[in-house]
Image 1 (tube, rainbow, N blue to C red):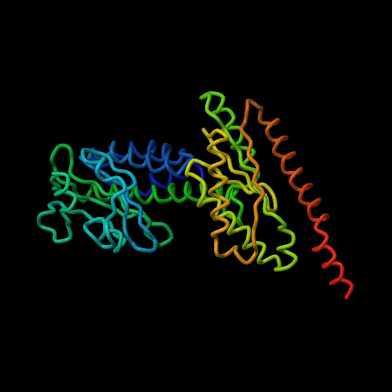
Image 2 (cartoon, rainbow, N blue to C red):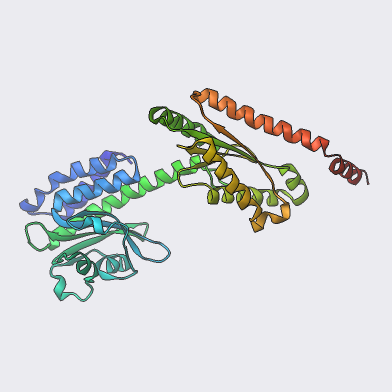
Length: 363
């Protein structure tokens, strides 16, 4: 859907709603609103632009966007603008609680011209912040019949109450915003899927090559260290041969889970090949990389789901020292090749295992 289509939809919706000359003046905003929101490329940009435009059109004292948890029904403040905004980010509203909770549960826009006369109003946040809510309008963000968020505006700067006209205007904007937000959400989801290995749910080899460039450039600019851990599963082929490929897949998944549990939040985990993983450690020297190696080894031993496989990992560490992207990739490929070669030599040298295998096949 193009920007022109978005704009035409919004303008058509508003033209049907407003008829007086005073109201039609507001239509001048909508072409710009449609274009600016539809031109956003990411979900964060889209959400921020929606809120910026709402602030421009309505001039509220406080306004916020909450996203709904599809399991619990709770709402969480994602964006909050205005006088008490800093205190709201990250806070939650329980299912059905307050005006926003009512809007989410009933999937309807709502205007409260005077909150003192409405039993649905919850004064919890007012009590915590010392702010006084007088008038509220809010509207749900609805996609395919499901509410995934609420936009709520509190008080007008000039002290007036919100009006039914304001509510119609807000509803029109949120209907359009829901389309743009859904589009940005699915675009982000598809992009993420392209970078994630579907089996282990860590980043894939393609994304490693992309991210390696960014980390090399960042390391050169900042002068910080950059280390890599090379990990492969010992005798993984034997696990597949003895227990089957379904069990082999579970081993890969559990190994990836151990890597996630062991790594820091700043570390990036990639599945490089069949049973090969790489961890990028930004701002990390080889000494600290060894600490991660130790955590991984210990956690693998304690992973109950892997005990019956007697799983072992071969882990190599390399601290980048000014190599280019291509040089470091060549090093990575060589490192992985040498590991495979060493593994094959070990398998050939394992006489007891090979003789037993030969005897079984001959019987």
